[in-house]
Image 1 (cartoon, rainbow, N blue to C red):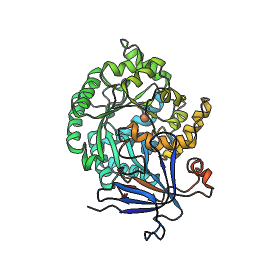
Image 2: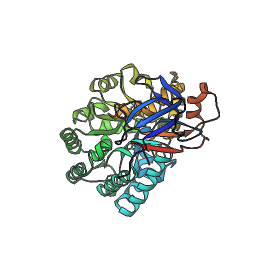
Image 3: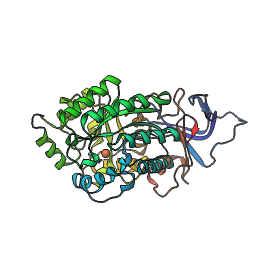
Image 4: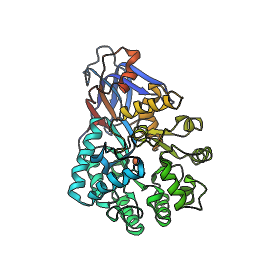
Amino acid sequence: MPSPVRTLRGRALSPSRESPSLERWDDALIEIDELGRITSIAAAPPGCPVAVSHPGCVLMPGLVDVHLHFPQTRVIGSAAGPLLEWLERSVFPEEARFAEPLYASAVATEFCDAMIAQGTTCAAIYSSSHPIATELLFGELDRRGLRATVGPALMDRNAPAEVLLAAEPALAACAALIQRWHGHDRGRLRMSIVPRFALSCSAALMRGAADLAAEHGLWIQTHIAENHAEIEATAQAFPAAKDYLAVYEDHGLVGARTILAHCIWLSDSEWDRVAAAEATVAHCPDSNFFLGSGRMALGHASRRGIEVGLGTDIGAGRSFSVRRIAASAYDNALIVGAPASAEALLWLATTGGARAIGLGEVVGRLAVGFDADVIAVPLPPVDDAGLVDALIFRHDAPPVEATYVRGLRV
Ligand code: GUN
Ligand code: FE
């Protein structure tokens, strides 16, 4: 087993526990133990013998992507929206290819390369519906040293046969994946339960999914209230439910380990119930722009104390860069009339995301006791006051120089 670096030194930046404040060090010395945990972070002492780790870079926590789709890596930028048309024309035909193991493993490599290149150290990922593709993705994430929460997209209706799997074999495959991967390498990899969205799931599949998640204490990921046509079709498919969230509530899918992606068109009642259940939100503004889905106001969540992370939503989102998604979130916030600062968005991109997937005491900050998931980002030519803005908004800046998970360079 490779061993982690035991020190990192350099200019550093970390979110504090509470948004939006950041801690900054001109020259920090970070000490790391043999398990990859931070044991100390402080100003480097005078005459410090440790060399600066990445000259010209700033050290910060690895970025957290709380929502993306592995099997959409090769259809990024397919301008076939809105949502339901895009799924039919671009997404389902591509996801069908993941039945083929050689194809799935080639894309798994590209997918991990893309995350690492953008400094994403931790992600909540939808696989295709195929158990084999999910197994291959777990294997590649493991070899590459990334941290992830992953499940096959559960779907047993309303899509081409090649991407469907009936409830019984799908849940049996999940049980096998849980045995193999859930909690692997001290929790670096976690299995999650992913009913894709209500339209692609029978009632039996959703109920079985909820039972399996409850039995193993797994996180649940799904989509909600993204697009008007989707919302209308869902109401028709589940006439007994009083609204979209109720479809998931009625099947046992909404709780303190549920990540809801998009949440653009939730009613006040739905928002209140998300808060009461302590479910969390994946905010995916770039995807929401690209598919013309609408704009989620962060205030609905922050007013109610709901945890929010940022999602690239690859491939409806156009970039693996969570920094770029933070920039989209900035534009989105301005448009809805509730501006957000770069500091608050960097907080969401790191510790906010970690909290939204239950890892808020493990990653997302540079602090004693946290795992040393760290990236070195080339410092833009800017004074200290403009640093955070420059880290988020200069899209033409070079990508990250180095990405570490538990002190291991990935
Ligand atoms: N709703 C159901 N499936 C998907 C998907 O793959 N992407 C997005 N953006 N929304 C969805
Ligand atoms: Fe999505």
